[in-house]
Length: 148
Image (cartoon, rainbow, N blue to C red; front, side, top):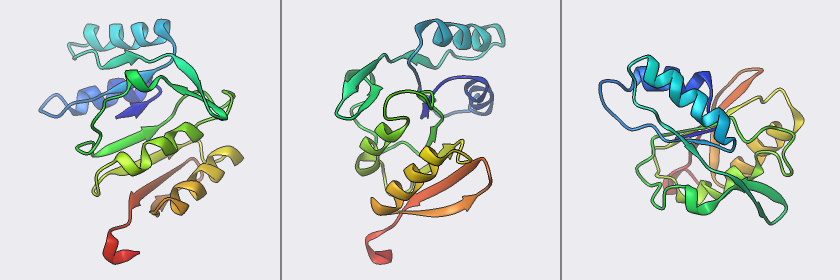
């Protein structure tokens, strides 16, 4: 699952040609169309789904009805949207944390920005551990009950 479509969507669609399912949420209808067009022109399935932003507490986040109801089988979540300047930034991704399966990895892009560093900390508070990190991204996984 990808939050924010773009080049990573095309790369993931290429990687998943042999199997699997990619769900890519994008707040901009026009950008979702452009990403899907690039995929189709490359002979790939078009995975980007338009998911408008809506007020959700102290953040603007993808409309809940646009997101899959069951996230337990999602193996990877790439948090690269909505744009960092959106009200609340990417903090809405925390809504996903308790709904993801035990083996799901969460990749947070742009962790060279303070808001994303804070988001990593909030995922850790929600029971995730940092697996790997660079100056631009961080990979987390959910702690098992035995590890807590």
